[in-house]
Amino acid sequence: MPRYRMLIDSNKCYNCGACIVGCQQRNSVPYGYRRNWVRVDADPDYGFGKGFQPGGCMQCDAPLCVEACPTQATWKGDDGVVLIDVQRCIGCGACIAACPYDARYRHPERGTVDKCDYCASSRHLGIAPACVQLCPAQVRTFGDASDPSSEVAQIAAQQTLTYVESPQSPTKPSLAFVGATTVTNWPRAAALPSPIAAMRVVATGVRYLGALSLFGVIAMFFKQILIPSDDKSGAEIHTPASGKGEKP
Amino acid sequence: MTMIRRHNQSAICMHWFNALCWLFLLGSGFALLAGEMQPIGAWWSELWVGIFGEAGLLVAHIAIGSLWAGIYALYTPLFLRRDVLPFLREIFAVSLRCDLIWCIRKAFWLVMGASGMRKIGMQTQLPAQGFYNAGQKFVAIAAIICSISLVVTGLLLAFSVMQQGLEALVRWALLLHLCCAGLMAILLPVHIYMAACAPGERPALISMLTGFVPEDFAKHHNPLWHASLVEKAGEHNRH
Ligand code: HEM
Image (cartoon, protein in one colour):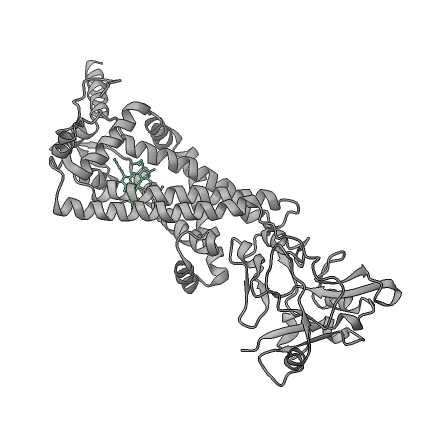
C-alpha cells in the first residue's frame, strides 16, 4: 500500500494561483470555494516584502476532523490520505470547525463536506494531483513516501522539513515544507461544536447504563431460576382492588 | 378459566412491527455513529457494515425508519378511537407516588423476595394497578416521547443535507436523536425482561400474541382494570 505525501517548497512560489484554479477545475469545486490556497504574509526576508505559502489539507496523522465526525464519514486511509464518504456525510460541519487549517468547506449544492483528497478521482490513471501538475515553479512534490526511491522520500530524507501546526491543537500534519517557510503558527485552535461534544458524554452514559440494564436483567433472569423470589405469581403482595384511587 | 380480551389484533400486530423496527433501528443507528460517539464499540459498526456495506447501512436505517414512521402515520388516524386513544389514556393515567412505590417495591421483590423485604422492614404490598402497571406506563410514555422526537430529528437529518445554513440545527438534531435512542436502549432490556421473562408475567406475554388474558390473572395483576370491567359489565346487565 503506497503512503502518499506532499512536500511544498514555498520559497519557489510566486503566487500565480495555477494550483488553486487547476484544483477547482479538476475537482469541480464550486465558484467561490477552494480546496487549497496560497497564504500571503508580510515578510521582509522575501522579495516584494511578502512571503507566499501554498497549502491545503495537511493530511494529518492525528486528524481532529476525523475525531469530530459523528457519522464515520471521514477517516484517514491507509494510503495516508484523509477521505470523505459523501454518502455517509450529513453536512453537520463538525469537521469544518475541528480543522485548525480551515481546509474543509460545505459544498453549496451537495450539502456534504469537501476537501483535498490529492485528486483521488484521477489518481488511478497515474496522474499527479492538479496542483502538482499545473504548478509552473515545481513548488509541490507528490508521491509514495514508503518507496525510498521516490522523489518525495528522497527530499524528506535529505532536506530539513518544517511543519505548520496549531500550537493549541496539534494534529501531526503529514504535509511538510521544504526548508523554511513564512509563518508556521497561523493555524487556529480546533473547535468542537457543543452538541457534538455532548454526544460523547451521552454515548458514554448509554454505554454504561445500557450495560447495567442489560447485564442486570440477565443476572435477574438467572437469579430467578436459581433462587426464585418467594410468591412466584406476585399476586399475594398486591393490595386488593377496592375501587379507584386506592392508596398504598 | 374465563379469558378476557386485553389487546386488539391491530394493536398486537403494531406492537411486534414496532418492536422489530425499534430493534433494527437501534442496532443500525448505533453502528452508524463514529468513535467516542458510538456507545457499543467499533466491532458493532464492523458487524453491521459487513452485512449492509458502508452506504447500504445508512440507506437501510433511513428506509426502515421511514417505513416505521409511515405505517404509524397511517395507523394513528385510522385506529385513533379503537387503539390509540385508549392506549394513551391508560399510559398517561399516572399517579406518581403510587407508581414510584410500585416500581421500587417490584424491583426489591425481584431482587430479594417478599421475605427479604420484610426482613429489612419494607412493606411488600404493591399498590393496585390499572390496565398497565407503573413500569409499563413509564416505558410506554418514554417510548411515545422518544418516538416522536426520533421521527422529527430523523427527518431533519435525512433531508437537511440539501439545505444551506442548517448545520447547527443538524448537530442539535443528532444529539437529540442519540439521547432518545440511548434512553430507549437503556429501558428496553428491562421492558423485554419484565414482559417476557419475569416470574408471573407469562400470561401478559401470551396476551401480546393471542389478545386474551385469564380473568384471574387480570384480577391479581391489574385489579383496577378488572374492577372497571366488572363495573361496566354490571352496568351493561342493568340496561
Ligand atoms: C422483542 C422483545 C419484546 C417483547 C417480548 C415485548 C413484549 C411485550 C408484551 C408482552 C407487552 C404487553 C404487556 C401487557 O399486556 O401487559 C408489551 C407491551 C408494550 N411494548 Fe413490548 N416487547 C418487546 C419489544 C418492544 C420494543 C422494542 C418496544 C419499543 C419501544 C416495545 C414497546 C411496547 C409498548 C409501548 C408496550 C405497551 C406498554 C407496555 O407494556 O410497556 N416493546 N411488550
